[in-house]
Length: 514
Image (cartoon, rainbow, N blue to C red; front, side, top):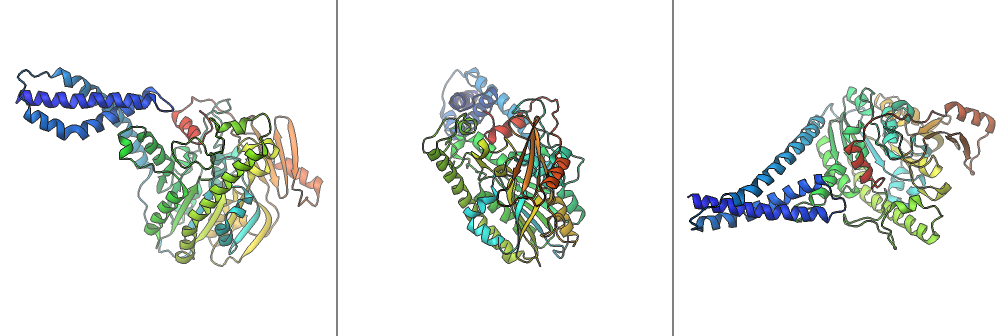
C-alpha cells in the first residue's frame, strides 16, 4: 500500500512541478511579468496540470510494483504548490467576500406604478457630434427631449459621473482629485458621506442595479457602492485576462470582454428580473474609448501602421499626419457604429415593455482629435472633450429639441424631480442657460473652467482663455464674461497618500500608464 501511495505522491508531485515550470514560462513571456503574476500563474498551471493528469497518475500508482518508495520526490513540489494556492485563495476569498458584501441581491419594491422605472445609459468617450454616426440612437432620441448644448463637468469619467450622481461639481465632491502631486497619481473616490442618486431613489422605493464597464465606476471608487447590485464587467474581463495568461486556463476561461454587446445582454437579463417593480438601472458602455478597433485581447492597437505605444499619438510633439488622423477617426466612428447596433435591442425593448420609464442617454465626456492640440481626453477643457449628447424619453414628454445650455451634474436633480412628479427640474427644455463648472484633469497642470451656453472660460495656471461658439455668440458678451468668472471653480485639490494597486490597475486598464 505504501509503495502505491508513494507512486501517487510522486506522480502528482511531478505534475505539479511541470505545472509550476509552465506557469513560470507563462509569466516570463507575458507583457508585465511580476512576482505576484509568477505566483498566481505557477499555482494555476500547477493545479490544473495536477488535476488533469490525476486519473492517469492514479492508474499508474495502482499498477506500481516499486519496492522502495521515495516520498520526498513528490512532496516538495506539492508543498510549494500548496503554499501558493493557500496564499492565492486567501487573497481571492478576501476580495470575493468584500465584493459579495457590497453587492446584495436586488429586492423588488413598489408595484411598478408611478413614478415609473429609471434607466440611465451613459456612453464613455462620446462626442456630442457622435450621434451622426449612430442613426438608431439618434432616431430613438427624436421621439423625446434632445438637449443640443449639454456639457460635462470634467473631461474624464470619475469626476464627471460623480457630478451626475451627486449633483455637485468636481471641486465640491472631490472624486477624481490626485492623491499626490504627480501627473498619473492615483485618484480619490467619492466621499461615502455624500448622498448619491441611488440613495435618493432608494428613499423613493427604488431598487438599484448597475452594469458597468469602466474600472473607475467600481464600488471602491464610491459611485456604485450603494447600488443593490453591481455587475462589474471590467473586473470580470480583468480576471479573465489574468487567467488566460495561463496556457492551461486559457482552454477553459472565456475572454469575457467588457464590450457593449455583453453589457447590453447583462442589462437585459437584469430587466427580466426587475420588470414589474420600481427600479433604477444604470448601464455604462466604454466601447468608444481608445484604443479604438481593438477586438482581440492580444492586439495592442488596430491602426494601419500600428505603433508600439498607443499613447504616442497623445504625446506627439508634432501634428499628426492627416492620413493617420483620418484613420484614427475612422476607427472611432466604427466603434460608434457598433455601439449603436448593440444598443438598438435594448432601446426597442424599453420602448415596447417599459413605456412608463424615464430613459436617459448621455455621455460622460467627449473625445478630441487634434482640436486645440489635444488627442483623446483629460488634457484640457476643450469643446471636443466637454460637449456631450443628452437624450431623454419619458411618458408625456413631447418630441422637443432644446438649445438651452445644461450641465451633466443636473442628472441628480432632474431624476429625483421626475421621481417626485415635478418634471425634469434642471433639465427642463426651457429656461436660461445653466452655468456648468468643470475641473479635474488626467494629465498636466490642474485647472478649471465654466461653460455658460455658447461660451466657456478656462483657467490653467495663470492663463485664462475664453472660448465662444462661432455659430452662436452670446447676446451680452460682457455680462457673460462676468458670469463665467463668477462661476469659475477652484482647481481640484491635491492630497497626500500612498499609491494603491487598485488605482494602478484602473489606470493601466484604460491605457493611461504603463
